[in-house]
Image (cartoon, rainbow, N blue to C red):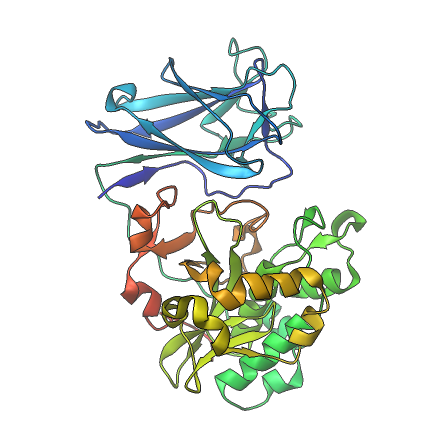
Amino acid sequence: MSRLYYSEEGRVTPALCEELTRFRRVRKHLELPETGQAAQLFILARAYPDCDTPLKLAINGVDLAGIMPLHSGFYWYCVDIDADCLRVGDNIFDLWSDSSAMDSWSVALEAGHERPCSEVSDDGGISWRSESMGYLNCVRAEYVLRVRLAEGSDPPPTAVVWEDPTSPRLDSLRARLPERALAPGSVRERVRALSSWLAGSWEHTGSGRAEQYAPWDAETLLSWAPRQQGHNGKRPIAMCVHYAAALVSAAQSIGIAARCAVVTEAPNGTAGHFIAEIWDPEDERWFVVDPNSDALFVCDGALMSMTQIQKAGASIGASIEWGPSTVFQRTFPHIVEFCETNLTKGVCFRHRSVWYRADLLTRPWLSPPGHGSLTYCETGLIWETRDLDRGFGMFPSFGDTNWFDHPPKDFPHG
């Protein structure tokens, strides 16, 4: 057993992080209990392309070996720490680079903290402040740095939180839905209608083609994404995350339990995907839908659960039932490539998680501000228990088969 210690939720905005130099250093404080065993330190950092400068690290005033870059994007760096490096109570983690300019390393941060346990220095560590942080000196924030101790255990995963059925936001969204989704019919037929409607609504736009992230707000997405213009007049990032988030809200608005599912091929992976799981009360199980490619997964006429998809592995392509809007999505070469090299080969399904909040419309401030634009880091992701020992120790929540397969608890709609 082990326990993760952290003071942020991984709500990272990729365009606003903290740059490191030999003058500009960052410091993180974490309260830890007594430990007699080695620990793991996780740092979400980004090295510049062609960077050959190590990320410098000191714990409680003791310099450790520098961390060499492994990737030019955001990456979880894991450092093994001897027990004698840590102490009971306040532990101080310092990070910096030997570069004199902001051109080597940056550290992820989560803005919006009133009293952060993080600090920044502009004079090489002589003085520190917990305000005017981030490379533009404009936020109070926590740096994304976590420690996992061998002792203790993570708390049990929380239940999924649903939309408030009395919210006018659901009525407003429901008025936009296609008639086929509103008409009487099976959950399968109505979800297929929602999936095809969303997949045909806009062109998938990832972080490589735009810079400003769209919110997980279905009605805003249906306004911004089709016309490719959103906040500040810029083209919005509206990708797999947003198709699934919109479907989860739309399904709940018509009384169907739906939750966000996040999958990936590996920790720090680049072949992840964001889909939805729908509860079918007739079959009494969750099934998977991909409203980006307009795909359902079917075996012997029945819709497949995530567990079944994982078991199918590389042969899952034979079980995909493409919808009418797949034709539209396949007019874009990057979607064709994704389907052929990833989705139909089951690459992205090797590790699965659930984003525990499904109340995306009624509590929008709790949705991540950049998911899918950097490596996964949100603490609200609940992974399978077996993944704790498969490289996912930077996350605090893990569920067993019963948690993932359990009927939607306290679902208030329908």
